[in-house]
Each structure stands twice: as C-alpha cells, then as structure tokens.
Length: 459
Image (cartoon, rainbow, N blue to C red; front, side, top):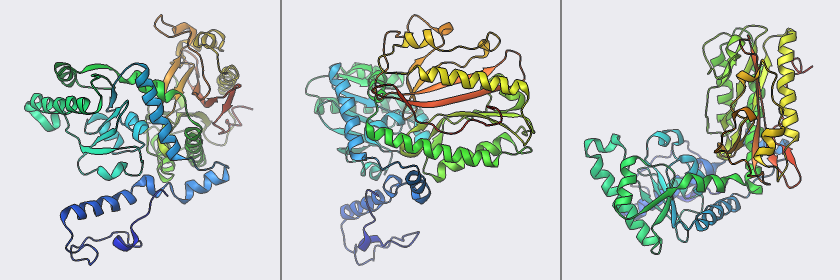
C-alpha cells in the first residue's frame, strides 16, 4: 500500500464510516480544514493505494514476480514525455484520452465514461508543472501518484453541459488554456494535443496557440517500456492467464458464449483489472470469418471456441492474448487440427524472427504467411505494439503494405509486441485465433505470455 487511512481521524474497521460534524476530532474546524481532511481520507482509500488484494498478490508471489517501483515508473514516464516534447520544441502536452492521462499521471477516473465524455484532461509542461483538470470533486484521485503538481476543476466543452451555448463554453475553456500556456511555457506557444473537438481546436488557434499532434508524441514515449513497466505488465499477464484458466475450467457445452465471456470479466475484476476493450469470443460456425462478438449462441460439443482477451488489467496494462479451445470431451476433427497447426506454426515462426534492429520491412518480408485458401481471411496485421492498450507499431502482411507505412523503422529493446494469427479457410466452417505477447530484449525476445495451447488441438 502507498498510503493508509488516518487512523485516529476516521477509524479503520467500519465498512461505512459515518461523517458527523460533532466528532471531537473535527468539531469547530473551518471548512478548508474539513475539505482537506476529506480529501486526505479519500486519497488514502483510493483503489491504487489499497492495492490489488490477496488473490492477485498471492498469484504474483507464486509466479515469482516482485512488486514494481511505481514512483520510478512514474518519473520515467514523465521524462519520456518531456524528452519527446523538447525534441519537437513543444511547450507542453494537452491530453484527453484517459489512457494518455494514465501514462502521464498514473491516475484514473471513470476510464470508459471519460473516453466519450470529455470531463478530464491533463497538461504536462515541457519545463514546468503537471496540471490535472479533473471531474467535479475528484481531486483525491491523483494524490497517490506524486507527479501531479496541481489539480483544477475541469471545464467540460461537451454539448451535454453547454447545450446551444457550447461556443461560449468553449471560449471560456480556450481562455483558460491560453492563460495556462502563458503562465507555464515561457513564451513558447507551440503545444501538442491528442484529441480536440473542432470548435476547441479553432478557439485555441484564435488565441495564438499553435496546435500539433500529441498522439505522435505520446505513442513515441509509450513505445519503450521501463523495467518497472515490464514488471507491471508481467503481473497483468499473470492475472489475465489465471482468469483464462477459470474460463477454460468453466467451459462446457450448453452454456452461452456470453456466459463464458463473463468468466474472463469476473477473473479480471477480482484481481484488480479495469476493463476489457472488445467482446471477441465466438464458437463453432461464428469463428469463421473472425470478428464476431460474444453472443447468446449456445456452445455445442465439438465446437471450436476462439477469443481475444484485449484485457486492461492491474496497473492499467494490457494483456492481449488469444486462444482457441475445443468444447466438450471429444476428439477434434482432422480439419480442426489442421487449422490449429497452421496458426500455431505461424505464431511460433514469426515470434522467432524478433530481435532489436530488425526493420518493419524485414518483418513483413520474412514473416510466415498463410496458405492460399486462408489468406483472404487473414488477420489485420502480423504484429502490433502493446502497453497500456494496443499501441504503435503495427506490422502488416506483405499483401497489405501501403506506401505510408514507415518500413525502415526498427524494433528497439523495451518494445512489447503481440504476434497474431487467425486461420480460417475462405468459405470454411470454423477458424482458429492465437496470439502471444512478446518483449524485445537487448539480444532477441522474451515471451511474456505462457498460457498453454490446447493439447487436443495441438497434438
């Protein structure tokens, strides 16, 4: 734990701690003192301070994974961001994407809700403070991190709050940002921004702010993970794989795809995970072509059941693994084994190629492709980056290379890639999805995922 409840002030044993202005410890205190005490209490009870619980900690200990140094990780991230900003001569970075805010501050607040309701943003000055504009009365949610210099209330510029007066609201917001830039950026008015609505973008330009691509800045920073970030990712992968084991143990003919998928959600949440980005689980004929989302279809004995975790787990790290299982106690068909062997061989071969210094062109030129009758159903890429979510880079099949893909960029130590395969014949009945998560090291690669392949299908 990074903090503890103030023992004398609020007690430690009640699940619900009643507030009474007559309590001796706080009676007669001015409002400012009460607000400070309330914030301190709330900060001490933040989920990131309380930790991930006995189940997750026991599993990480069993796997031999130590605790990360979160203070070092947070400092590393800010250094990465500021180095990228300085390299481009940007005065600061303004981010709305909750994943980007998590990277900059290691704090969270209603992550999925703020993805589509812009009620939280963060400004990172290149040579100055980190200022978090948070949702109403949420100041306590970043106190644990030690990298946020100030929390201010967020003025949201979405229609939900402004209605037909949204232009006036955007104007007030732009005045605030222009004043912030003048206050913290020493005359430099070039800032990077990840996402802005058109009116907000225009309002900044009208106030003399030069707006540049912030997603490019933050993706470059996020691409190389520190040792502590890798520890967090290892823990997220272990949590994901323990949840997958609960899924596989619960798989039975007669249950629906949704019932099976819910087991992964449950396993993620009880271990302190955050959400799952997609619903990619399908069975039987719904496995070909790929990209069916989990449904009410009843799984039958002998079906292939394929899924992609896309799981945001503990510490906000993504565990992006895919497996295909055989439902029931029977033996697989020859066709099921054949499809599985194609997918498993492709992933294994393409994983062995990975090493630092290899260019993206090298990868798509040398990677194992698919048989002609499976190639039309191929997955959207051979490899993609992963960190707090799916990230840069994406390496396509040679058939899908376009002129604006940076072919000569190279793999670097500290990158993490997912190695993908979907194998299903064009017009076929079923398909197989497999995926592994891999760290690029100084000398080659290390497979971070360890969940076994289906023994019957892979026999």
